[in-house]
Structures are given as structure tokens and as C-alpha cells.
Image 1 (cartoon, rainbow, N blue to C red):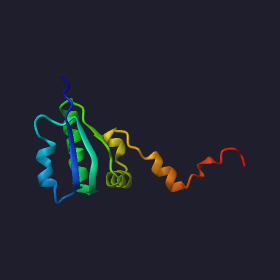
Image 2: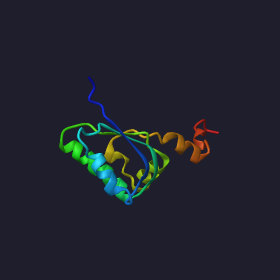
Image 3: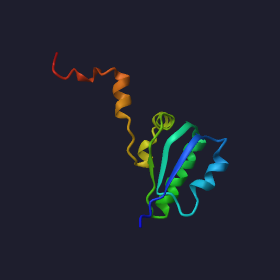
Image 4: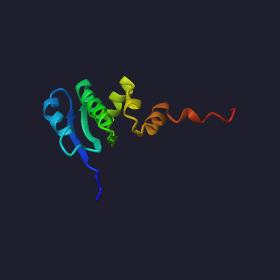
Length: 110
């Protein structure tokens, strides 16, 4: 029997939903994974909830992974440079390549 429990957040992860989402994030049994693919908007209050959830998991000696980072989540993580705090991989390589227009190929000396 697996102890995996995924919590999927849909819609806004903002101050307007913080009171609603906090008990969900800290429900028993605790989530081992938070799927952020359905997050349409995120602000600093939403980020604080995720940071508190991660900090609580670490203090309790359990795993908590963030997955499926939506564009709204990636934008906030990049803006505030907090991806390393969570230690979870995010797919940002394709965004970097598309932003540079593929110009990273000039290593042939020409």
C-alpha cells in the first residue's frame, strides 16, 4: 500500500483563497505531492502557503513535492528566485530556449 497522497490545486493561489486553502494544505493525512498544474494565478500569499507547507513537511521529517508547475507558478518562482527553496524540478528549459529564439547554437565558431 502506497502512502502517496496528491493534492491538486485549481484556480487562484492568492490571498483571496488563503483562508480556504490553508486547512486543505495541512489536512490529515498530509499530502506528499502538490500538483500546481491547475493554478491560474499566484501571489505572495500563495507562495507563503507553499513555503509553510514545505517547511512543515521538513520539520515533520516527511517528503513534500511540488509538481506540474503552471505558467503562473513558474512566473512567480522565477520573479522571486525561490525554486531552489522547494528543491523540486521545474520544466523551464523550453521557456528559456523560446525566449532566446534558439540563438544558443553559435558554439561552432562561426
